[in-house]
Image (cartoon, rainbow, N blue to C red; front, side, top):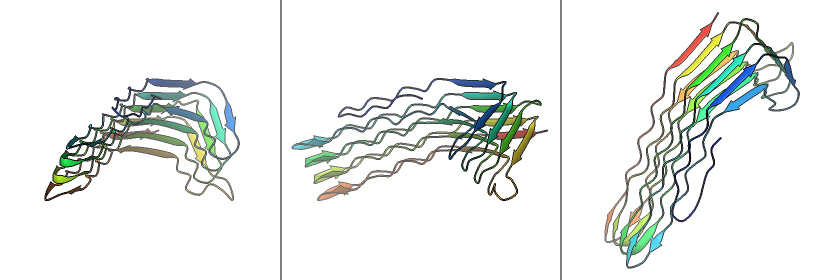
Length: 238
């Protein structure tokens, strides 16, 4: 997981590190939200920008969120979870959100632009022929694999006799998600296990940032950011 920063002059978030998990043994968990394996290469948001209020106000722009890294999980062993919301394997890569721009005010005011979001990385999960995954709680999925783009940063508001808004940041793209299951996956029990999907694989582009308002005798509002693209999802269940 990468760090995030916040400050007057924003700093771009660093990229996340690649995550690789190989499990050849037996693993059991008990309790709420107790996943058997959690591999997360998500990235934090970029910092928000500072505001400017003078005769001519010019706000800083938000910076770009960091990209999520690639994640690979391979299971040869036995995974058993008994609690609600306790997936057998969770593998995810999530891009950081773009930083919000600062506000501005003055006789002439220029709003800052929102920062672009980071992209979600590649996600790859294999449950080998010797691998078994058993979940017994409600909302407990056998394998969850997801790549999600971050949300774009919002543009800054501006107020003055003449005020000009800026564009908001675009959402991040999501990466390719691949799941191979050659083993056995069982979810639920006699009286539990509602919404216990065997495999959930998804690639979701991030939403664009919303434009903030402007006010003045002459005022031009900022533009909303474009949404990110989804990636390819491939599931092979033998």
